[in-house]
Image (cartoon, rainbow, N blue to C red; front, side, top):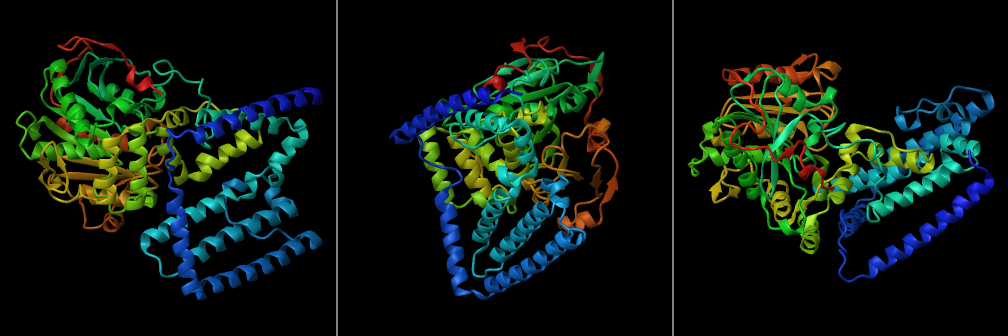
Length: 590
C-alpha cells in the first residue's frame, strides 16, 4: 500500500490529467465539423416524458393513488426498521437482488434501511409511472425503459458514501481505491471518446489467434466485405457437404471461437465438418454505400462460389447467428425466387438460424430506440460519419442489461479501484464493430420500423422480391428463453414463415450464453416440440424438456445432410490458395 505522501502525488498528477482531458473535450465540442448527434437521442427521451407528464395531468388519479401507497409502505418500513434497531427484531424481508449480496445490506440497521428504502422507491416509482393512462404503447415503453435506467442509476451501491463494501475498502486503503478508480474512469473516457463505457475485461489478456479465436485454419478468399476462413480438419475423413457459418457483423465472428473448451467452431471441426466461416470487415467511411444486399452478394453468395472452388462442392449446409441469420433467411428467399440462375435454392441443403429475427413485430427493448424521429437522428449521424460507430451500438446493448454491463463495472473499476478480470466473453463483447451507413439505414427502417421482411415482396434485394414462404430448405431454429435482443417469441413467429420443414428448439439463458453452450458444460438444457403450433405459447405448453446442450440435438438433426465420408480437405489445397493464417486481418481491426 502506498504512503499518504505517495497518494498525494498520485492525486495531484491525476488532477492535472483531468484538467487536460476537460480542456480537450471542450475544444472538441466547439469544433464545427465534429459529429453532434447523440445516440440514444436526448430529444426523444425528453418528448416521451413530456407526453407522460401531460397524460399524468389529465388523468392524475392513478399517480396520486400510487403516491399514497408508497408513503404507506414507507411508514410501515420505518416502523419495522425501528423495531430492528431498538428491539433486535429480524430485518424486514427483502426482495432478492444480487446488487445487495454483502451481509452489511442485511445485518447493519442503517444499510438495511437504505436497501429497503431504495427497493421500495424503485418499485413504486416504476409502478407509478406505468399507472398513468393516455400514452401510446411505444411512448409508454420508452418512459418505462428510461425510468428503469434512472432508478438503477440511483441504487445506493453506485455511490461511494452509501456502499458498505466501498466504504470499508476506502478506510482500509486510505482512499487509494478511489484514486485508482478515478484514474480508471479517466482512461475509459479517453478511450471511448467521452462516453461512459467501463472496461469489462483486461484488454491485454487476450491476443487473437493465440489464446482466443485460435482454432487452426487459413483465410482462403476475401473481398471488400469479408474474409472466408477454412478450418483445419482433425481426422482423415470429413463429411462431404461443407458447413458455412454466417456470423453477425454487429459483432465479430469469434464469439463462436473463444477458448477451445467453448468454441463452437472447434467442436464442429471435431464432428467431422469442413467448416468455413465468414469474417466480416470492420468498415470505415469508404464503405458507407454498402447496403444489405451487398452483404448478401459479397457474403454468403460469394462464399458459395469460393467453397466450390476450394472443395469442388456446389452444395453446403449453412448456419447463421443473429443478424447473420436474418441475412441467411433473406439469401434463402433470394435463391428460392429463382431469378439468379447462378444460385438455385438446392445449393444450400439445410439452414440453421441462431437467435435470428425475421418477424420484427416484437423486437424486445431494442424497439425503444426505433421510431421516425429517432431514425432521423441516426440518419443525421450516419450522414456525418458514413458509418455507425461500434461504441454507439455497444452503448445501446449495454443499456438493455444496465446493472450487469454498466453499474457492476462502475462499482468494481471506479469505486473499488480494481483492475478488470481476464474474461474471454467480455473481451469479445468489448471488441465492437462499425456498420456502413447504407446497410444500417436499410436494416433499421425495413426490418425494425416497417417490419417488411415478413411480408411477401416487402423487401427487394438485388432487384428480387423476398418472400420467406417460398423457402423450402429444411431449417433448424434455436432461440433462448432470456434473450433480450431477439426475443424467442419473435424468432418463433419468423420460423413459421418458412415454407419447408422447420425444427424449433428453445435453449436456456440468453442471447450469448444460451448459444455458446458446449455439451461438456452440462448447463441450461433445452426444449423441443414435434410441430409448430400457431403461437409461441402453444409451442411452449406442448414442448418437451431435455437435459444438456442443444448442440447435440442440432448435430443429430444435421446428420442426414452430411453426405458421404470423403478425404479430409486441407485449407489452401484446392483451387483457392491460402492467403494468411486464421483468424485473418479483418477481425483484428478495432
